[in-house]
Image 1 (cartoon, rainbow over the protein chains, first blue to last red):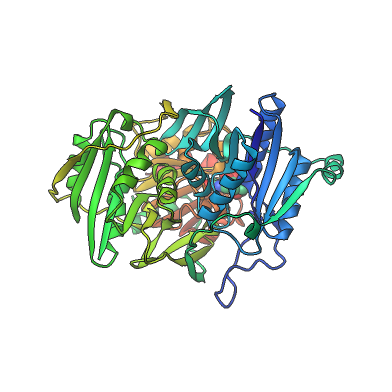
Image 2 (cartoon, helix red, strand yellow):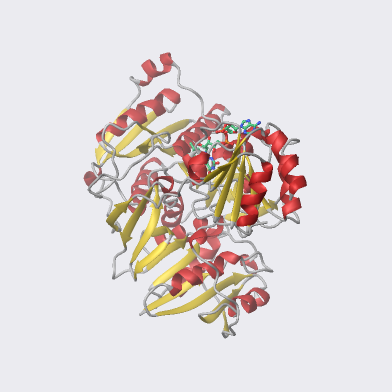
Length: 249
Length: 312
Ligand SMILES: Cc1cc2nc3c(=O)[nH]c(=O)nc-3n(C[C@H](O)[C@H](O)[C@H](O)COP(=O)(O)OP(=O)(O)OC[C@H]3O[C@@H](n4cnc5c(N)ncnc54)[C@H](O)[C@@H]3O)c2cc1C
């Protein structure tokens, strides 16, 4: 195949303990470390490996987000992507609008595969990939832990609740990544320098000509109910007694 | 009035427990009428089980060879063809529902409400975001169908004392051929199912090897418990992926969860928020798992597990 499109979402780093703003109006993101969504990094790594095996010729990273998402795209370029596209939107977009943006880029770039993370770790929605496949009328292979390409088809192993499912899909198609697909490479300093010269195209979302979907209204943000710290026991006998007290054994 | 269509999850023979939990969630909507949809190759057995679930008005059954395996691209158009007249379309937040329902939502031109944990009104729901560190209340547009997945750990299955009618339908939509099932490998065992078990023993990176993980299995077997694991234990190859508990694994709510050699990363804790009693066994007294554990024991798991097994 010629091209692979990869989505890179800018999200709060997975190590940050996220808090609700004191006025409940949203999540505290000021001064918080931002990173590429971990699942998207896995998607990019897989695209790069497919290209390195000679099964694709160009890897394009795409982000829909604020101007600052250029940082994540530059990281993607440093990892080895060939070029980057930022669809700039100061406000976050809903999953269906994101899928429509990707469909527009699919129509322009005609990729053989779109690789996305199975979910973004901010909204945990797990929707965009399936939605893109639906409106594109193409196959979806979600939660992938193995991707093998045979010309115009791909065989994908998926992590499902009862084990591993294998499906065969015709290309082009959408693949969403699970954690065990690969381990993303580290970026090396010379690659960061090289990435500065790679093309990064910026288009405002409003100029893309994509109809936005109706997002759900975000009515309230609140912290979860905290579990209370319980008791400490000294030994196995104490543990068994505590379990018996609760009628659990 | 809310007219709800719930997409039944099954393996061809048995209705998955997740379906009865979706019914429980739908029951929380104001003034509901609930239909279940079974898409199968030979679905009469599953439809019969579905018809027993309380609160179900009727079961709709589409039998088709193409429905032998649950391929989202094949099932979604059949669901969309029936969607007219329903205000809500629900599926479980299992890998089945997570794969399928967004495809349905997109074909209907709406966003999905993922992982409903509580119903606040016909179009208002609570759902966890940021690995459960934040609870968001969302309101879906009142003039569009609500497509949603249900966080099964938040609901108790409805009982099965009903006898709802089963209606067989023929589907005339053209189904795609571009997605084909190849195979399923499952580490299925005689042990209780992790998602529905009332007792779970779970092991982490500290086990150190697949051989050592046998300690966890032995304790679980003694207790009649299901086995779970942290991502680190799965990544290291000690156990298969279907045992992972957490943000990106299974969200579970057993009465008792024993976490052994698991540090308690937020991504893991989000999978056990609704557990009745959490027991933590860890050699590091500062491990974050102790912050949420109901009963904590500091010590070396290699010494504690055999002792515990003998004491039970
Ligand atoms: C996007 C993303 C998604 C993730 N999703 C999940 C998920 O769904 N589920 C999940 O679990 N993780 C998930 N993680 C990973 C998570 O962040 C942690 O890395 C993981 O949970 C750690 O597993 P662990 O507790 O087994 O290992 P560690 O954190 O290494 O903890 C091992 C613990 O064992 C203790 N220990 C060591 N030796 C002994 C001994 N002899 N006796 C007793 N105790 C001992 C140590 O004190 C330590 O607390 C995710 C991460 C990311 C980035």
